[in-house]
Image (tube, rainbow, N blue to C red; front, side):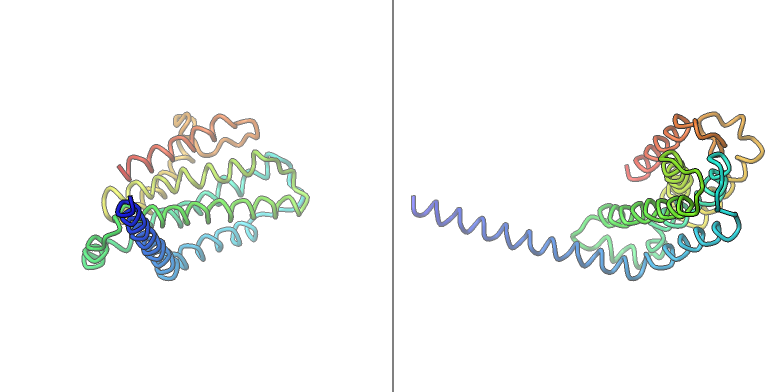
Length: 220
């Protein structure tokens, strides 16, 4: 019994050390990626919010008018944050180094994707709340619409970038789809980003579902 007890204690000690090393490794991954792969996309995302506030009069807007800056500009926050998730690995040398580590490459991308999504959600919530502070007619739908549009357009760029290994292609396809919405939005059905209605909750829900589908396909 004593032998088995000592063996159990030894096993638990080894597992604790492995867990500690694993936590330190993931902390290092997050630190490095936030330092080298997060700052510029996030600054671009913040700039979009500032630009939207400068371009549109956000003061005392009725509910429908308040959707315009949300649908027309804030959707690009998703493109800025989500499309460059795979950007560092466009350099073959960097990809070889990352893939040689014991942490799976997909997990590294998941970490980047996670902080990108959090950033998109936070920036859009702050923007919509800023509109509310300026006495615009804002509801929970406006927050949902902002996040849904950003996630969907960002997922398009994310998908193309992940499949092709080219972030530039992701940006271009996302921009192309954005432009298509102007000329053919009536034909896009549930893929239409510009509903222009505060009652189009189902349309925005579809955008979130399609965004989730594109992200899942990319990682799979």
